[in-house]
Image 1 (cartoon, rainbow, N blue to C red):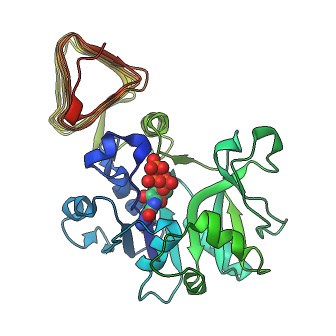
Image 2 (image 1 turned 60 degrees about the vertical axis):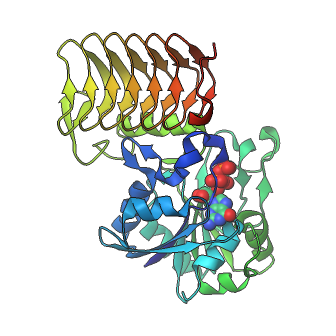
Length: 366
Ligand code: GTP
């Protein structure tokens, strides 16, 4: 089976983390999100994936260093200008004349893809959309259906009390090749706002598959942190990463991390390979990236440190993300969903709350 993964977006809501790393390559518990997604696709029999790219395409080539990921063959389709979700699919599907799975490159899910494909086949659909259920659909595209699953319409971001259903478009599709013909070439088209709503006019073409298991769109800072909490809790599998060893219940380590006996690790925690947690440091509900450092007296709570991030003495990080190779100076603080971009510096003694710190404008803001 073939798949197209949409990875061309700029990921503006996660800036500055996405300034140098495209959103699908950001780590979720020390594994690039896209690697997790490819492993999931592979586990459901996908053997060929086209990455539909536009923003920072070289980052993907460098990450995968070739055209293989496990048993999957990778192909790269690079848009010269953003073509939107449908335009990107059309461009990536050049030369494909069979059924494809299409996924947004920012959705973590435990969906049984095989069951969805069977549903699609049984209905003889041209396209099937995976729907998941959310408490508050007012930020999403809501998809009402008939009893047999046929889609009757699309409602973008309905007020909570007026939403006809809580089932939303979860960003994974099964498409037959005739759907590609419905998309104009080389122009920006949205599949969720243009192609699918038009397909509703053709009876028997568009169906929706409801699955109420784990689903998360990791595209906002809050959800990005949530994805880590969920993976650490075991919502997506017993191990947060395949190579993690459990030191004590909920405290995981990869490889040869250097953890002082006098450091406090409060589960759930994942410490990456080669990381160093010094005496008197405390880490709780967090991920420390590979070769990261949490120095003496520093505290990291409900946060994510990417590889080579350094938290100096007595610094305090809570509910925040510190990017690759970034440095939080001695006694500094980051809190309330602060994002520190790769290579950025938070000056010693400064405090950033709900802030964005990029390498270009590293800060000592208070
Ligand atoms: P924000 O800027 O934060 O909204 O993130 P985003 O750019 O990723 O946009 P959004 O989350 O709406 O995109 C959903 C999925 O479609 C993501 O996997 C994007 O990578 C992908 N995507 C968005 N626009 C394009 C595009 O023009 N071309 C391609 N190939 N993919 C796109």
